[in-house]
Image (tube, rainbow, N blue to C red; front, side, top):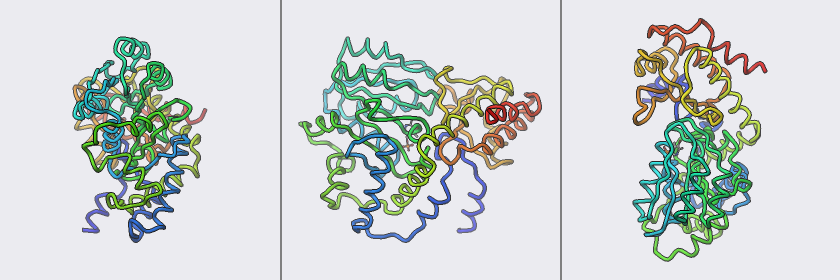
Length: 391
Ligand SMILES: *Cc1c(COP(=O)(O)O)cnc(C)c1O
């Protein structure tokens, strides 16, 4: 079995929508012997992890913790704790993850209004202003980097509008945290969440969340008992704060991994990480366009972490992705919803965001496209990317 997993995983390069490649230092940390989950030493590790997470979110919020679960668990926690039955909620939807937030908010009894933008476009702040002027809400929520479309949404104007109308702003920073500036305090985000497996170079299983003062007030003033025990933020706050009681068994080794991943991130430096992603995204887009392909996401709002590109006419989605996997052990993601078979989603997140990956992918894609009868000019892709890296 050991050999089977070793052979299966060797040399894989994850350039899809997540998980992304895990740093070898994180893999080593994950394999360390387990200690008790109420061991005082584990609380030390978690305290350091909380500090590193606050540094990553760029917040002074005391309430900044990793939730045991994937990004969706944090998304659920970020909504259900602040929405009581009948509460008015405005959710901005421009892709799959916005739709998921609508589903969650409706399940906990929120009176949900949906503000939609076409997939591939941003939510216009003026539309949020119009919606809240007509119908104020207690909670506004939005996705920072829509992984389904490759759009990076400006958050600051939305935060200002939400606050002007007395709402708190919940932001999904699952693919943006550590890849592009989130800056929770400066931006004025009230509740922000992420996941370990995108730009933090860890495996899936932990999901950071941070809660600001305005949102804490709502939490304190809650009238109805939360229907979820596991995702009760007040209980989780106590569990990782001073009380340190048993709430659920902490995923000890996952916590080692996240701690190590965050240490590695801050050794590189947060700003340096943003720059690496910015440059990688630019190089990849430049290479794709040089090959004659068209990008999907709205210009000027393209996410460095996930690049979306139209599949040329006559080229088969599945065959190309199989070519990349069989010949280069390289994974990219298909389009979602009505864009399945129409676009590809190429991730450059965390450890996966490296020059050699950009170059390898462009080389491999050229070969796969030629096999499909689409002939880009030979070497145009890597030349386009190299030009950006050389600047
Ligand atoms: C991946 C992702 C999620 C969901 O995270 P899971 O870890 O799959 O539960 C939520 N939002 C965005 C924007 C994502 O990219």
